[in-house]
Image (cartoon, rainbow, N blue to C red; front, side, top):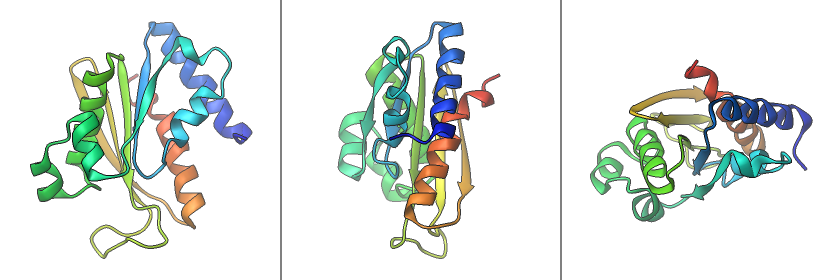
Length: 160
């Protein structure tokens, strides 16, 4: 079940997309499909949700959304460059109008001094634009994933 606060954000995103007659696609690593699940929990979301990619492995990041191997080798999966490539690749692969990408370290393992647990990179692509930003969330794995979903659902506000 989707928490009400997340449901409300998904509804807000849907309204915003419908006003523009846009569809969104998600490409998720650390959330494992949670953003798409939240969006699809809204009745009528098929009008504005094109679909989603769960690209947990680097191999699927490359195969499904065309993240260059060089990007992953040079910057790693958790980076601005990878988030941008994921968003742009999902946009191209889906034909949607906007793509939301997330890649991060949800924990409790996997963090490093350079990329600690709770670090998440976001990518947002639309038309000829792409922006990235990072957030550092605290808490356990579930808290980091939930905070990532919330931030992703609010990302459309960066366009307006």
